Image 1 (cartoon, one colour):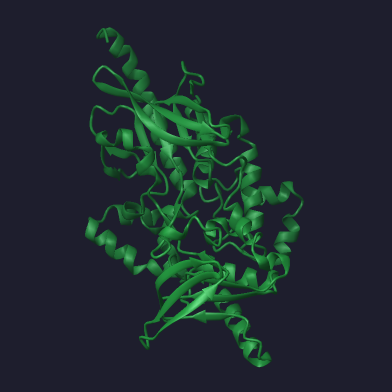
Image 2: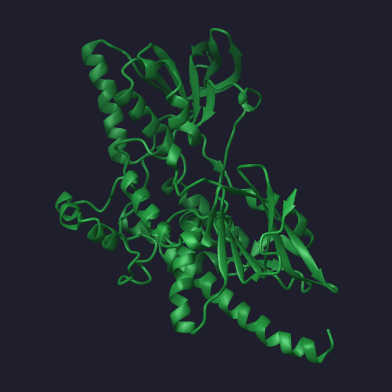
Length: 443
């Protein structure tokens, strides 16, 4: 049953998702209200019931991997009331944070910062609704605006209308072979469900539990550390296809690739050169671990050798040839790529720290796809489209191939949100000027 919420209202913009990207956009639109002398009618739809940033993965002790100065606003407007520094000041912790002598707050604290900012925009946010699809609304031969259809937690569908949408629906857990057929078993789960699923494992009740972590990146390493520290009865194998855990390169010169200026450099390259740049700096973001965390894991394994209690392992050069569920556990056939040996291992649980795919925008925009040009975007993140699509589609977090590795990260949020915000204002002004002309033409 469709409920046409505000069916006579056509918003200037609807944001799909209210994670850091669209939260930064909400701030940018508020700032532009002052400089532009008018406001845009904007709302945001978020499927979570309340604001949470990676809420199911916020293990104790995990830290941010970028400076607190790369918050939602500081690189664009250091005096913004929505800065991380102002958040600390408002919560009476600024001096204490300074005394820590670190640029890297805990993920838990950064999540609290984001929740604090999001609270200032509650009137624009609709929580507990999952967007199902974005449909074209034709006026004559043109797609004048878009219908955003969502479903709330009671199963009711709602429709809202907009002249522009900004799709920031995030990544979808990547499930690798041979686990596709096993995901109905609660003993096999993606790292995105880590906290809720681990709490139901036997180790949470103090019972011996063998756990496999599949993956070699930061998420896998953080899950390893949490199982070690929080669940003494857990025995963990981290299964790694490569020859070793590799450190993330966050040295100063390399970190320049996450600056807003570098986005211009990447975008201005032909496609083949863009691909080369992405590959060259792949080890800054994918299948790598913070060096200090690697050292801590190595230290744990060394102390096991000293004590003789070989509780955990990091199994390198291992390919998982097959996986199957039994009453006794999850059986994995591991193929040692160095020796060509194969050996079966049995676990009580398997955690897939296998990253995310960035394809959710394609499903949401399928009804509009015929008007789009293969989901390519311009420099300001607007999807390229045929002339009959007057409504605008912007993408956040799906443009790595054209805008560089920072596209899925926090680093460029202040600059990107302003670019999209200004493009939205320009679009609104164009549409406003076109209306009198259309009336004169008798449309």
